[in-house]
Amino acid sequence: MSDWSGLDEFVGVAELGSFSGAARRLGVSSSHVSRQIARLEERLQTRLFYRSTRKVTLTEAGQTFLQHCQRLQDARDEAMQAVTDLSSEPKGPLRMTCSVAYGEEFIMPLVNDFLERYPRLRIEMTLTNQTLDLLHGQFDLAIRLGRLQDSRLVATRLAPRRMYLCAAPAYLDHHGAPHSLSELPRHNCLIGSSDTWSFAEAGREIEVRVQGNWRCNSGRTVLDAALRGIGLCQLPDYYVGEHLRSGALRSLLSQHQPPHTAVWALYPQQRHLSPKVRKLVDHLRRELMQRPEYQESY
Image (tube, rainbow, N blue to C red; front, top):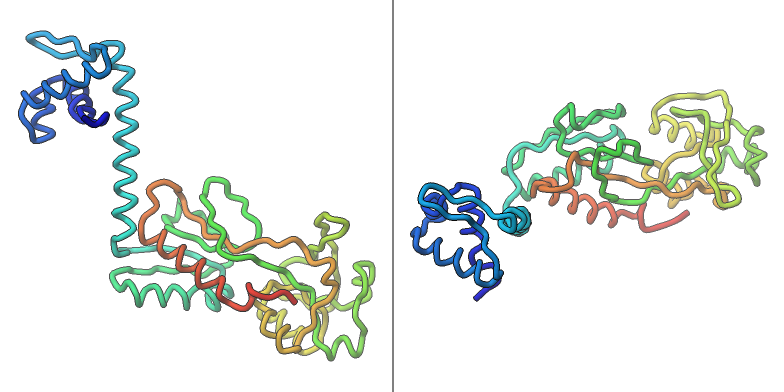
C-alpha cells in the first residue's frame, strides 16, 4: 500500500467534519473513506479523530498531521499544474513594457516571432523610457536594462549588457585617443542622459564626470554624433556593436570597461508564473543570446 493512501480522505474528513462530506467531495462511498482512515491510523499507530454519533473532531496528532498533509496537497497540485503548463498553448492578453530603443531594435521582433507561433496571444507592449510600476499598471512582464532596484519583482537574466567608450576614426585622427581616464577632460564627450560615465579602476567601479559641447537624452542621436566624429561616446553594446565590427567606431580604454550589467526580464510574482510569460521569457533569452552583440567583445 502506498504511504500516500488515505491522505486525501483524511484531509476531506478533517476539513468537512464528516465522513459523508468527504465521500461526496471525493466521489466515493462513506465506507471507502472509513476504511482508508482506519488503515492510515493503523500505519501511523495513532488516532487521528475523535468520533461520536454527532461529529468528528481531530485529535492533537490529527491537527499536526493535517497541517503537513495540506502542504503536501498544495505542493502536489502545484507540481501537476507546472507540468500541465509546459504543454499548454500560450493564449490571452499579455501586457509588457520595455525601453524605446531596445524594445524597437531587439525585443519587438522577437515578440512578433513569438506571436506568429502562438496566435491566440494578445500582446500589448508599452515602449517607454520611464520605469513603470508593474504591480500598479497590471503588467505581466518588463524588460529592463542595467542594475535592478525594485526588490518586489522577480528577475530573470536574459543577456549581458556591456558599455563601450568609443569614437569615430575621424575624431581620433584629429584629436588623438585618450590613454587614461585622466585624459577624458581634454576630450569632447557626447553627453546623453547623464554627465557621469562608469568605468572600472583597480577592481572597483568608479564614476567619472565628463563634459562637452553636445547633449541629448537619446542614445540614437548620441550614436549619430559619434559616427560623425563630433566626440567620444559611452553607449551599450546594442547601439555600437555593428559599428565596432565594421570599424566605423573604435573601442577605447578597454582596460577600464565597467563591470557588465544585464538585460533582465521582470515579473511581479515567482510562483504560479503563467505559461505565456514563462515561454516568452525562455524565447527571449534563447534568441537574444544568438545575437552577435552577446557573442563578441571589442
